[in-house]
Length: 198
Image (cartoon, rainbow, N blue to C red; front, side, top):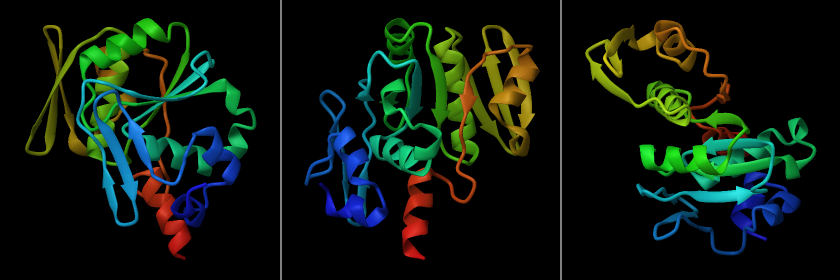
């Protein structure tokens, strides 16, 4: 097992389930995520990292494999049967080709988005959720407002109001994809690190 993950509080059974070894390198198919003490590199890539059970009923989408591990560590009691979960990491910048691949290969699944508890995380929620439903979006930050374009329609949301729910409401959509946000940090990995620092 990995000593660094053990110090972070990731149980050995969970480390084994994610196939974590001594070196924390996650393959995105040509690009790699690297996690060591004091260093975390998440790739920007057209490929994906996949973990868990590919035929699972619920798919959790994050930006990094380490965020997936932190999320499940902090929510282990909510998911007593890990075989019902599949994890996908998109890297730093989710693209439409990635989302189309997910849509085609994970049909009729329940999706949970696990992106940051900040403006970038909320914008990523919108981009990914809309993309999973086949809707391309364009997002533009201008001052204290975000301009969201979908097809020929444009909606403007105040920065402090941006969320997947506000997007759905503004465009009259019901996407049916849920989000999970860490209550005490920007990301679940940051929350896990902070909990171990106490």
